[in-house]
Image (cartoon, rainbow, N blue to C red):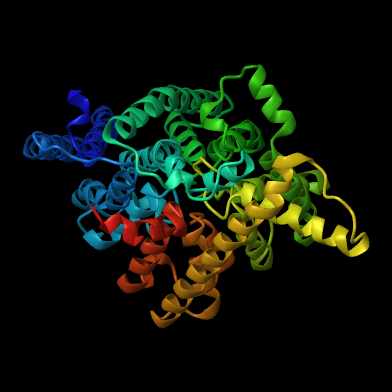
Amino acid sequence: MWWQRPPLFAYFLLAAAGGMLLPMLHAARTGQPRIAAIFLVSAAGCLLAAALLTLALMNRNPRITARAQLGTLLLGYLLMPLVAAVPLHLAMPGLGFEPAWFEMVSCLTTTGATLLDPASVAPSLHLWRATVGWLGGFLIVLSALAIMAPLNLGGFEMQSVIHGARPGEGWASLGVAEASARLLRSTLVLLPVYVGLTATLAFLLAVVGEAPLDAVIHAMSVLSTSGISARADGLGAGGAGRLAEAVTVVFLVLAATSRGPRIRFSRADLQWLRSDAELRIMLWAVVIATLVLALRMQPDDTGIAGQLWGAGFTALSFLTTTGFVADDWSGDSGSAMALLVLATLGGGIASTAGGIKLLRAYALIEQGRRELGRLIHPNSLGGGGEAARRLRQAGAYLAWVFLMLFLLALAVIFMALSLAGLDFEAALALAIAALTNAGPAYPLAAPGGPPLAEIGAPARGLAALAMVMGRLEALAVLALLNPENWRR
C-alpha cells in the first residue's frame, strides 16, 4: 500500500511538523509573532524534508524488517533532536545550538533534564519542550509494541519466557507487510488512548487550580514520564498543591505500567489490577520508600501526614522516572540518592518509564526468594505453576544478564563523566539520572554539583548518549550490533 512506501524517518518528520503547530498557535495567540513565525517556518521545513525524502525513496523495493525499524528508531533518537533544536535555537540565539540539541535529546528521550532557567524561557518554548517529550513518550510506547515485541527486546523477552517461547524465537525477521502493518495497528490502538488520557489529566489539573498552560504541560509530562515543567516549583504550581499531586497519582501509575497505554477500563483491566506483578512490586517499593524517606525528612509544619504524602508522592514520581517533587518534600541529598535507586528500578515494560523495569526486578526477587527457601528446605518444591518456574529460571537469567549490562554501561558512563571534569558525586548522579531517563534527579542528588549549563559540551554529549542508551536499552543496541544483521 502507498503508506508503506515512505521511510519511517519521513513519518518522524511529519510528527515533528505537527507538533510544531501547537507552540506556533500558542505564540500567535499570546502575542509572540516572532516565535510563531519561527515555528511555522520550521514546520514547513520539516514537511518539505519529509516530502523530498519520500519522493527520493518512494520507488525503492525495501526489505523492511523489525530489525531495520529498530535501526531507524536509533537513527531517529540521534537525528530528530537536531530537527527539534532548530526552533529553540532560533528563538533563543544566545543559547547556542549544542545546548539546544542537548535540551531536545533530554525531551525526546523523556529524561527531563534541563539547562534552561524556567523564568527566562518564553511559555511557547516550554510548550514545545513538553510537546517533544510527549511525542517521545508515544514513540517509545509505539516502538515497544511494534518493534521491540517482535524482537523480544525491551522487557518482552521476559514475557516470552513466562509464556513458554524458546529463547531467540522473537529474533526472526519480520517481512515488510507485517512490520509496517504492525506499526499502523499499534498507532491506531495507542494514539486515541494516549491523547485521551493526556486531555483528561490536563482538564483535571485545570479544575484543581493550575493555569491552563501549566495543566497542559504537566499532563504531557506525566503521561510521557518526562517531568518537564514551565515553572521552577513544578507540579502543583499556582496553589494547586496536593490536589494536583493527588490527581496525578493515578495517571503516573498508568503511564508507568505495561497495560496503561492500552487500558480500556474493561473487565480485563480489573483483572489486571488484581493480578499484575508489576503493580505489586510498584506498590511495595513505594510503601517501603515512603517509610524510609519520611523518617529522614526534616520536621516541619506539614506534620506526619504531610511528610508521608510528600515522601510517597516523590517516591512514586521517581520510581516512574518522572521526577516531580512534592510540595511537602523536605529531604536532603542522602534521601535524593535513595530516589536514584527508585529511578534505577524503573517502571513497567512497554511504558514510557525508564530504568531496569519492574518485571525484571520481580523475576530476580522471586529467584532470590526461592533460593532462600531452598537453604531452609533443600528438597522443597517451588510451586506456583509452570509460568512461575520459567520466571524463576530462564526469566531470572535474562534479568540478571540485563542488570549486568546496565551496571556495565553505568560504570562506563560514570568514568567518562569523571574524565570530563565532574567530581564523584556529580558524575554518579548524572550517570544514573541520564541512563534511567530521570533527569530531575541530578540537581536533587548532587546539589553541590555544577548545573548542566556549566558542565561543558563533552560532558553534556556523554550524558545525551547515555539518555539514548537508557531509552533504547543496552540489549537493543547490542541487537543492532549482531553480525546477523550485516548479512543479506
